Length: 81
Ligand SMILES: [Zn+2]
Ligand SMILES: [Zn+2]
Image (cartoon, rainbow, N blue to C red; front, side, top):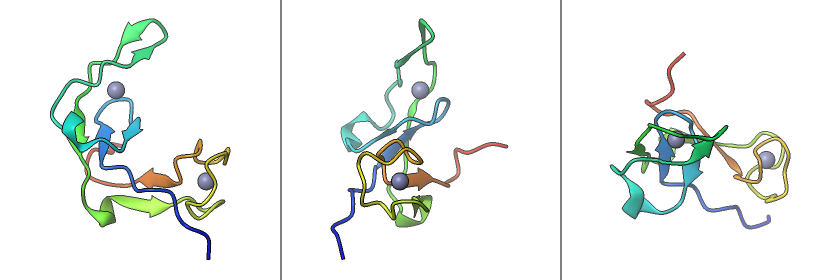
């Protein structure tokens, strides 16, 4: 089995960008989207249950189109539908 990509630890509560740096948790996201700064916050997503493997690459392909190379999909509490 190939080694899996690391699971991110934080997700923006608004734009759902992932990050593996847990020191961001609680800070504003601030990523620029269409020329505007995201007003979301980096939320804590430290549980393994917050994430599921990408169906296409099973979290092994950092060039995967389906997950943008993240390998993981956030399925935790910040998702609102
Ligand atoms: Zn954001
Ligand atoms: Zn993938």
